[in-house]
Length: 324
Image 1 (tube, rainbow, N blue to C red):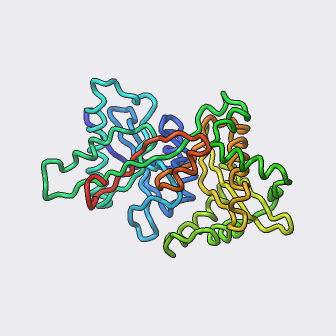
Image 2: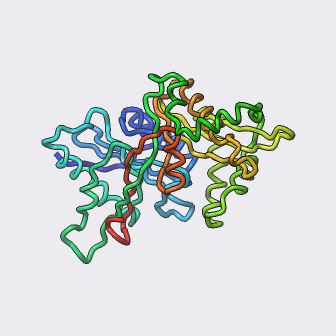
Image 3: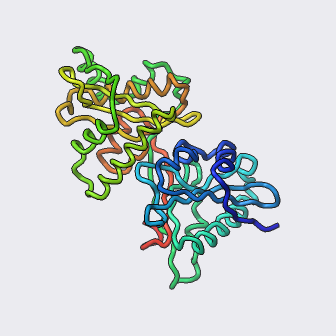
């Protein structure tokens, strides 16, 4: 029985998204349509049973492109199919992925995806054109995020006890004085200005894309897909720190974590992270995902709050080198 690949609409995609163990807020069809210029939703069907869906995001130039500030935008297997029995797991994933790859190369000439957590078998992509040395291969990049799990089984005190000693010391320091008040009113412009004031290692193109995404992210918070934990200066209403979270059914995803330079070293960053984690717990989330821990400084910072490393993969075709 052959695997068929076909386009589906956003409503169909939402029903299938809800039935996948690999779904996240980033692939929720409403969220992804906000964060991407255009999304094509594809499904693989064997017989009458959907096997897997895969959103392909496109830029304003109609090029395949993962949206800025997103993670885990890739194939989503269905609950009734995944996990596959060991004796046919490789055969079925090969069958489905190869059909997707063939179709995407015909349709777009390129593939770019961030595989959801849990999809760790990347051999099908690694083996594409394996015996054709003159043909392009996939670039496969191992990536890590940092997650605090089992939030609902921990008290607030237990969560804080898992912080590095330095972070707990910072909390005690800022608690000696009244922490700056929570911002009750804020706009996307406030976050953009804060973002632009703290980033100094990004190109103008990346800054522009991220500013566009910040506006969309604020819209998503206002639509009920997340929260903004923000603080304002004690003498004015200027936003001096902000943590933007997006929620799915069980995970909180930290998409933005910004602190004004003047407040670095005061303990405000640790205070805001603590408040964000506890806010996620109060919403019933079981996991707090710091979303990306792939540079020495940022990785160490995120793990200092007791988060464990979780492996995932980014893939791209054609890739300059097949494994980077």
